[in-house]
Image 1 (cartoon, rainbow, N blue to C red):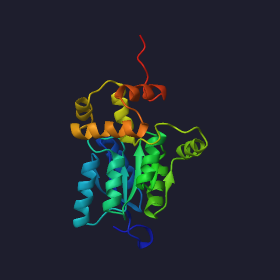
Image 2: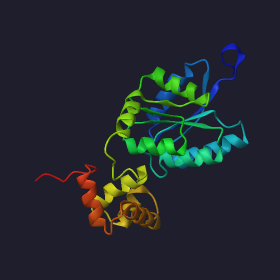
Image 3: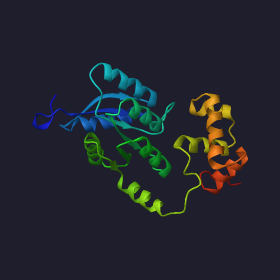
Length: 225
């Protein structure tokens, strides 16, 4: 199928762990003459598997619309692997999570866009079109917050990746390495490595110190009695 003026449509892979979200995005994009959804995936690893399948069959998509928080491999990690393996594929993050650490991590791995799921449908299409041209599209509110943060006091947690922040929250909640591994669907060894990296980055010597810092920085709150 050809797009306007005989041009090939922008091909898109939709990645989200909620089927209703995937179907909703596909339905809207299907109404755009210059956009074609070629596949969908329910998590980060499935996205990578799908990209490899498309590479060897019909061809890689131009753009991947990627959620962030999904079971198993998260969207930012999947985006990083995808950019390394398939640099011609552009990634646009579409998520409910707008924490600046997640945004910065996504930008670091080379995504071409970051939108929140409350974005208007036409903004999602605009982000896809912008990414297909190799340009970046950021949610307006996130752009303002990033700009403000440049002149704000430094964040002691800024060195942590989005996954490390997630694990720090679990550490502050008293989870063991085994429990963290089970909750995030990773190996206990990987969980242990993440915790060690967190302590090293924050220059702390114990999980208790890490938990206290997480509370001080407002990453978690103490339960009220």
